[in-house]
Image (tube, rainbow, N blue to C red; front, side, top):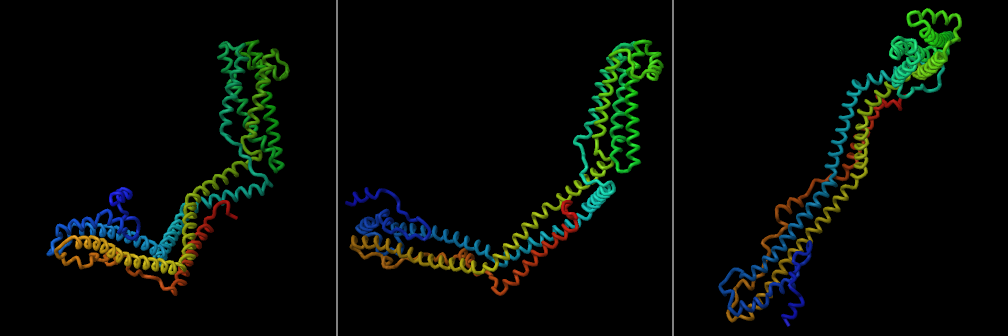
Length: 467
């Protein structure tokens, strides 16, 4: 029957370290160590000797297994007490007060440092922006402008386009001038470059200044712009008419006498050209003039002076805004974080003493449970020893050792070790009557941080917040 029961139970070791404060399974441990058989066998051999005053091998095995379990549970107790200690620190009013005070002091120090830094780094940029903005406001008021300035994108690519216009017109004109030139196409292009460059540059400048002056409010400036624009357009048309006559004269009388002949023909019959290619030359020049004139007119805002004034204000605003962003964005985040922590502390600190008392109560209950557990450990060890000793006494004929009548005790209590004493030592607690004063102190820290930040922002506002 014993062999059958052993086969049914298997060789699974007893669960002597199952969980925190779980009682020792004495039945499983008795079966594993086979205490009754071991006691009977040793008793038949009259072991241990009557004069022995120390535990034999079986008794030592029993106590070692129990002490091993007890030691593991003691280590777990220390881990639990450390967790309670960490929780108590989290609910320490004095610790929270010191941490929040330090955070507020750091935030104030950084804000005050930023205030000094802003005066030297942000102050000049602020003055430049205010001056440029006032200049723009005065300009708009003086010229009765309500619309925003028009700043065409990629303005400076216009010069690349002008270069392309001159190059293309020079090549095309060179083909027309090649007929009368002794150097052929190369000679024609050389002549055409001067005419094309003059045409494109004058047309661009004509559109950039005189034509835009017509939009001015002042009647005198507007009239002057109109006269200059008309005169410039007439000059451009005359230039292209001269170019057409010059080509005819070059083909007819050669390059040496072509200039005088072209001027005479231009005066006598400006629209009469001898060759259809000369007419094409005239039309091509007028077309490129219109393109250059339009690029000049749209190079900046139609109202003269409005574009540069607007750009100066925009550039000054961007410079001030970028520096403001560099200085204040991190400060705002730190201010928000500090104020949030202070507000949370103000809300939580009044309940800290209650939470700490609950933790201490839980800790005291745990210690009481462990004290009872140590008693159960001694009881379990003595039960196992008694099983072995009873079987030993029954099988022997001599008197058993005297220590068979003594109860076994733990070598010491874990509750008296230095680690446990340190972890359960009384901690300084804040009397409830001091809590209101601490709350007032934290509110002062919070108000000081907000006040310093608002003072800084008021002295150096963001461009979008300036009146």
